[in-house]
Image (spheres, rainbow, N blue to C red):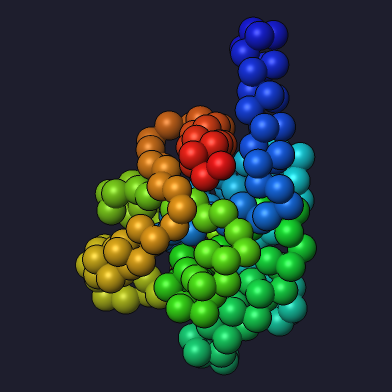
Length: 194
Ligand SMILES: Nc1ncnc2c1ncn2[C@@H]1O[C@H](COP(=O)(O)OP(=O)(O)O)[C@@H](O)[C@H]1O
Ligand SMILES: O=C(O)C1=C[C@@H](OP(=O)(O)O)[C@@H](O)[C@H](O)C1
Ligand SMILES: [Mg+2]
């Protein structure tokens, strides 16, 4: 990267932070879209705190996500998820990666829409499946046909994710490129908002 490119990148990041005006930037979308890993990079570029709702739930429960699903069940996980996100949104000045089901909850969605700027990281089924297949840490996909389960969740959830303020394609390119896309697309959105 040339000096001029680095300066332009920094300028975009600063401009975005200014236009966010203290609101959280929240990533939503399916498992495997890159919310956690890309979100961390976006936060680094914006010099903002990064939080991941799953990580916060794990810390609070002192259990992993699969353990919570196993021992307490999905409804209790969802209740914890709603509480944790409501708490994190109050921090304002952060980049928040949510778990894939979080934005599907009507209360969480309403809160994110009123308090934050939301970005849907969108990817096709093939890319998502390839990525989630690397680790067996997603209890919802422990089914006889995980690919079919993923496709059903996509069909159910995509109309809901589409309610996010901004949509960014999580393409088969380096995570840094997707992070730059998130910043550029959110910046475009906020410039229009003015
Ligand atoms: N642009 C990308 N290119 C290649 N791999 C990626 C990309 N984005 C994410 N990944 C990988 O996909 C997997 C899922 O990413 P993660 O950030 O955990 O997604 P999410 O939090 O949305 O479920 C991780 O192994 C991550 O390294
Ligand atoms: O889509 C979902 O309902 C879930 C997504 C996961 O987070 P990621 O989207 O970060 O994988 C995690 O919250 C849990 O396994 C449930
Ligand atoms: Mg994640």
